[in-house]
Image (cartoon, rainbow, N blue to C red; front, side, top):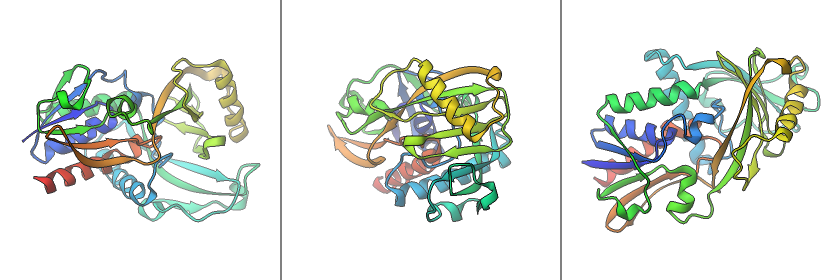
Length: 311
């Protein structure tokens, strides 16, 4: 059975791979490939961020966690590494719903909490180097027999196949007329310095992170709703550095090697549902906010489950 997937970001490629593994014939239609997708600029620390509803995103993120570990340990995908990270909070709260599903989670001792905060936890989670992971996903997709068409899609009704999976991210705003999809602009900085462990404040209004990869550490960030600007802004760079220096005083500005900007495809909740459009079965898989990588495999498995149930 033939399936067309629209979009070749991390969601589209992961979904395409899962559909191929389930026995479907899959073609991805996209006007952008890596390194031109939003996914390529993702800081890509596994962590559910700006994604609802929690009862579903907690499950999808836990399923993705397990798959990333499997890819790293069983398939030798070396652009996925495990790193420790500490999340700092201003008030004590319950542990997140996914905390029992990961290998390492503990509440921080008082002596480990950064100045200005009163609570926090430590986790060990995958860090994904997207400039390597995205080409790996594309290679895996094509190696399984998938094909890619480079073209724009003006309307879902223009696609001939009877089954379509919509993984267009921010593009769903125009393709589906979904005004609830809005950009949340993220600016990041790359620095050739390792902080030892990641440091995080994941509240949107004070968003701060230092994500150590093998090559660089990714510093962030911003969460600017409704901002479409793709050029880096000096004032945002200074804002990010000031926040990161508060959590990581040893940060050396002389080791900065670059900046990046991406637009998170935010929505009040992830849209993972089916509908009929022009006689076609359309499964929508978009609106992952700041958790596209974190939700990718869990959502891909859900698409396959929905489609096999329909068939």
